Image (tube, rainbow, N blue to C red; front, side):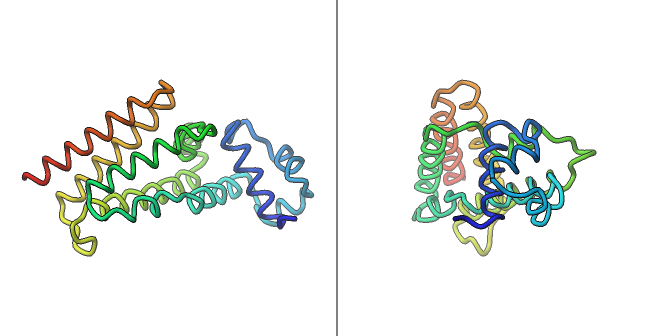
Length: 188
């Protein structure tokens, strides 16, 4: 049987992702994780602490960096990133980006720690995109950083647009735009 902390996190992951942070109560998590209230609060002093751990847990389970990190060229990295996004969107369990979903539910004045965790995770992803577009990841140029930022915005927009339209054309359009930006940068 899974350890108590892991059961709580798995349950919170399932509930926060499928029904939302605000729509999930601590009592439901306790009941579905089959733990005592004292056990939950021993591991997570507040719902906010549980949410932050959920976000860390969600980020640690992502295989995006591994999937894209095997690319040998920047063009291949772009293609692999959109293949990964397509698989993520069409796996039958997609309910939006977990981080964007949480941000849409919390208020800056009340949930600053949660927003800081989302920003930390997304900043790490941004740095990955910078390295992904760098010829030399140890010496990233301003142009490569800008290209990485543009690709990140395109991919995040594609995910949100897919959630709205439930069609893959936003991902295909973002991939084509990303490749066009790379081609333009290569000529420049």
